Length: 131
Image (cartoon, rainbow, N blue to C red; front, side, top):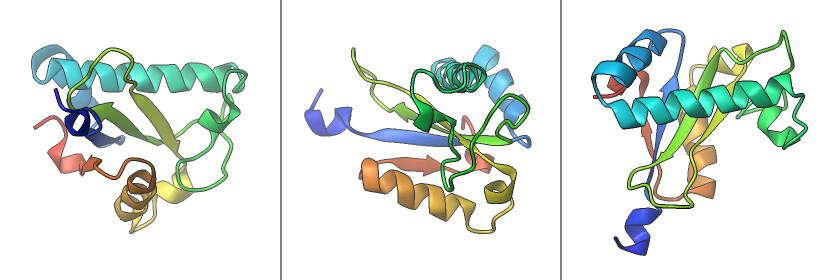
């Protein structure tokens, strides 16, 4: 695989509205992407419960400085997954707080933030979940 292909990522927005579809896809449909997404979310929630001891930045909202703690959990997640996973590549979830989740430009803001770090990221909208 080329180096360029290895840098290509997808970002799934996992929201309360499509979480059921993600869980169903993990068992019936696009198993790998859905399972990796749910695993990344689980890892982030674990980090929140551990109060960010491993990496405090993992406990901040993806678009503001809202700090997630036990009892102040994300309402949605941006999950980053390599499109062509290879050894050593990572998947990651970033929480989204209620204030950012309610923004009309949430998808644009997340895409802009991710493109700064991963220029070739493809952001999947909630209605494209696991299609």
